[in-house]
Every structure is written in C-alpha cells, then in structure tokens.
Length: 77
Image (tube, rainbow, N blue to C red):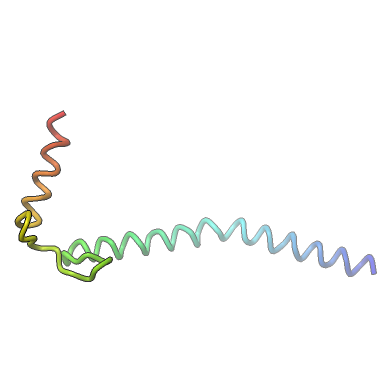
C-alpha cells in the first residue's frame, strides 16, 4: 500500500512541475492571440464589441480626426 501512495505522490509532483513549466507558454499564447485579434480589428476599423465599422461617427467626425484630437491633449504636457 505504501508503494501505491508513493507512486501517486510522484505522479502529482510530476504533473505539478509540468503545469508550472507549461503555464507561462499557454498564457503567452492566449495573450498573443488576443493582441493579434485586436490589431486585425484595428486595421479593419472594426469594433469587436459591437461588430460595427468605426470609420465615421456622425457626432464626432472621422475616426482619424478623433485620434489626432485625443493625442494632441497628451502631447501638450
């Protein structure tokens, strides 16, 4: 019975070491995929939440103008 318990403990330890080694790679892959999707949507001018093209807003004008105005406030400091 003691041998079976030691084997189970060894298996749990091996799985824990494998998880610790693989977890950063898995998290990095998921993060990179999310960033790729965001970049692709930005190139297409699409809002992922609504699925709407964000090229022109009647209240605020073309998207490029809004981006310039938003960045102008940051650069003036």
